[in-house]
Image 1: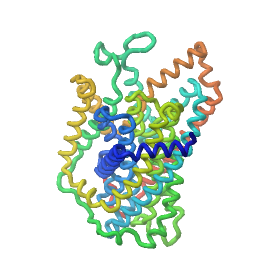
Image 2: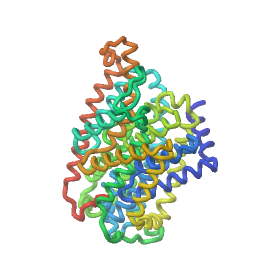
Image 3: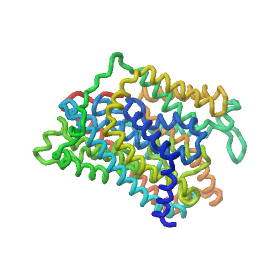
Image 4: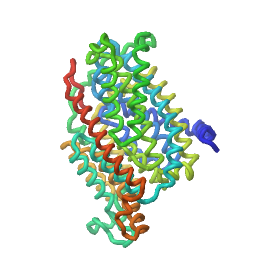
Length: 512
């Protein structure tokens, strides 16, 4: 069956009432997650991992995909109305969107963000549909040295490019690799780094690492920085006539397309993900603006909302390309979705499109459906998401901690899992407190055992010859590409940091 036929079969599955409800649940939760400051898609997916074990794999992954896309949409609401990005990729949106809201144009800012997100995510999902099967067919020809090289690329780029410090990112990655080694060594049966604790003989479950770092660690960190008093929201004028004027449409459609063109390729390579794509898009719009529009930047330029929001959502779809075809996560949320696959005994990679074709095409079809749902949720129902911002923070984060602990205990009904969860959560809190990124730690914990397996296979085939790791043509290309990715990524990060340090003509963007 060709790709189009398989996609139609995926729609036949995804359009079943049961899966439509799961997709709706995912996008609703994802949008709410994006709206709330300090709660990102990674935390929510991690929190729901233990709960979704009762679902079939297709339903669970449709929920997670909805949360992922919804989180990208919802972050713009908080950035525009509260000047507080719901997640890091929405920081740029706050620069111009909040100034539009203060001028009484919040509805137009929300509309261009929602429509741009819909267009970008839809186009990028088409790109995912076309590119992923081709890449998967090619990836089947790779051997153990090639996969080990790919994982080295993922380790190095993620560690170096996530966070503002290369050394801190690599240290976080090293800690994740260490956690991945805890347990019983497969070939010799020897226990490693267990300290004689029987529960650690099977290793530390990735779910505990993910939930601890994102749900517990983030909740403790946000709670330590909570400000008292009510949230100051900018009111939004109701009515569809206030959404976008003809001039707004004329100023927005090119940034939508440019943001999509920038975001999707950046998302497919390990070069910084959606954060870098949004800053790159903002810089492009500022540079390409006509003279009469350049002065509007920093004071509420609609192009500065349309472009970055499109880049944000296009990058989110691009991240799924290496995840589904090579099993390589390049963002924190992708890493946790990878662990969700693994919890069902499914390994994303080149054989995924052969062995689990029904599941993967239903997942891709659900992305198209979810985009339409999100457009409906983000335009007429914006008032509901504004009310979500008024949920008292103590209730919100205490509820997250409660569900995290219950989910950890429900995995094996062992109180030691809850203790491990709290220890990992405290580590996550301290890492945030001192500026260490947590995403490389999660990716190291997930990919570390996989990299060890591929290394052992490669050395067994070559009878211990280390040169076999670099003499494979693809492996050699991968290591050369690693240098290029690092150079590109560090350059883009430098551009991003320089833009963040530039003064703007209004209030600073608040931290979540």
